[in-house]
Structures are given as structure tokens and as C-alpha cells.
Length: 450
Image (cartoon, rainbow, N blue to C red; front, top):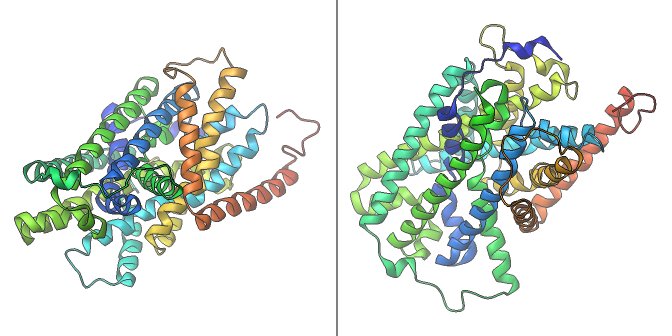
């Protein structure tokens, strides 16, 4: 292993970790996607999608908490999958994770860019789709520049953006409480609840969007070697983030449903700005729009910090292009890996937002989320002596809930997104086999141990 490992600075603590996770989870998600959830379900029953997403996130959060404290190392899921499947086909699954991440990671960050600029269109309604995509692309370049600093600087910026996020959510809750109308919140359409195929597909679509909004409770796990006392920090940051943001979402979105009729909510592209504009005028609406934009940027900023470490971690272990393991000689961060992830993200920001959201989840569920759930079970079976500072509560019930939930979301993501995910994995498998044959790795290694 390269000596460059010692050049990473452990400069992040529990506050930084929790702020990073929560800022990533909130982002643009609830401010722009809640109307999509209401539209998918056709009424206030959209809250069922949030409930389903929350149950999945809380269950999966325990998977991350146990894996992150049992298997140490920069790269998060890359390390967990590599080690959990080491006895079987660890190199293949680790390679496929990095491969799938190069699609899903930049797509997730790009959705934040595009969503943020869409929200800003409230201030500049003349923005066309071309303008929005060019602004999103430019924001990506700016984010790369901001990350060209030491990890302590990045952590400080993360806390500032997290505070702005809390202010934005607090203002949203305030306007919801002061203008709440129970009739709007409980205006269910006739025959809204049934076990029909249409209801299940609507629930699946709303749960997919809700889960997209909740992504990020594990964000800090990708930078393990830059966190002080990770065994203490990770479980707390993950669980606190999941529970805290889930409660914030539940309260905020229920109140939004009570402020406007759900038919108006479903049609809005910048719902919070519209609410403030209706009750407090254009000036206050512009202020909240700016705060929402900064909140969205907090998510983008945190994601770029963590996701840029994944290709670096794989390259350092010999699983990816060798040049990506380079660490900046003065500022101590993986600068080439940052440039790769940032560059792909800028390109992805030129795509349609709806497709980006669906493809983000479908392209990572099979390898990352389902793979980790199964991997945790394999680790318990194959390595019972492994030190586990945190052990899943009520094991294996949370694992089963998360597995069923993610499988349901994958099926609900649509044929285009599913096809993209499966084709990308198939191409990645082909590349792995070529790489493995050239390097005499599994399944072509006959005379050396795995």
C-alpha cells in the first residue's frame, strides 16, 4: 500500500460528520421533489411514500453503521464490498461498485446542480432549459475549484452550509405552522387507498423519490481516513442524521400539504418560493429561494468531498487507473480523483432532471445497497470474530426490511433507468474480465491466493 495514505489529514469530527450527512440528505430534494411525490400518488397520501422511504433509510442506516465500524478504510462501500465478498468474488464486486459509482455518483451530484438552478429560475423566470444546463455545468466547475483545499477548510464550509440548511428548513416549518389548513392536509381523493396495481406503482414511484431525497446518511463513511475516532463518530453521525432528517421531512412536508391544495403542490416547480410569495410577497420569496439554493449547494459540496475519494481508494489498492491514487503534495487530498468525478458530474448535469433521479438509484441499488445488505450477512457468517463496535439492533430484521424496500424501488424506477443500470453493469463486467485476465486475477488466477 502506498505511503500516500499517511498524507491524508484526520481533520473531521462528529459535528463535521453529522453536518456532512444531513446537508447531503436535505439538499434540493424535498424542495423540488415533493411535488413529484404528490403527483405520483395523486393526493395527500403521498406521505406514505415518505413513511416507506424513512423505514428503508433507518433500516439501511444500521447496515452502514455496522459495516463502517467493522471494516476501516477510505472509500466506504468499496472497502465493505471488497472485504465482505473476499472469500467469494470480492475483486469483481469491488470493481463493479467503482464502475457503477462512476455513473451513479456523478448523476446524484448533477441532480443537485440541475435542481438548484431550476429553483433559481423563480428569480429569473426567463431561463430556458439551455440556460439551466449551462449554469449547472458552470456550478460544477466552481465546486471543483472550492474543493481544491485542505480537508479542514472543506469541513468548515460544510458546517456553514449545514447551518443555512437548518435555517431554511426552520423557515419552511414556520410558514407551514402559521398558515396550516387541516382541510388541505387531509383532502384525500375518493378511493385513494387500494391494493390495485396503480396504487402500488404510485407508491413505488413516490418511495423512489423519497429515498432519493434521503440519500446521504452514509456520506461521511467515504472519508474514513480523514475522520477522527471513526468508531465513535460513524454510528452516531449515521443514526442521528437518518432520524433527524426523517423527522424534519415528515413535519415539513405535512405542513406544506396543509398550506396549499395538493393539486397546486403537484404542479409547482419551486413550491417553497411559491408559498412565501403567496403569503409574504416577492421579496421574501426571493430570500427563501436564495436560502434553498445554498441548501442545495450544501448537499452538492458534501457529495463532491466524499465521492471524489472512491476512485482514489480503488486506485490505491490496484483496482483502478494508477494515476488516480495521487494526493496533492501540499493540500493533502486526492486531486486527480476529484477532477475525474467532478468532470463526469459536469457532463451529467446537461441531462434531464427526472431521468437523472431515476437513474441515480437504479444504477446503484443492485451493487451497492443490496450488495452491502447481503455482504453484512456474509461477514457475520464467515467472520464472527470480527470486531464490531456497533452491531445492528434486532438483526436481521432491519436487513430484511432494507432488502425488500430497495428491491421494490428498483422495480419501480422505470424500464429506461433499469435498462441503463443493467447495461452499465454488464459492460463493467466485461471490462473487469479483460482486466482480470491481463493481471491474472479472479477468475483467471490459478497459482496465487485471492
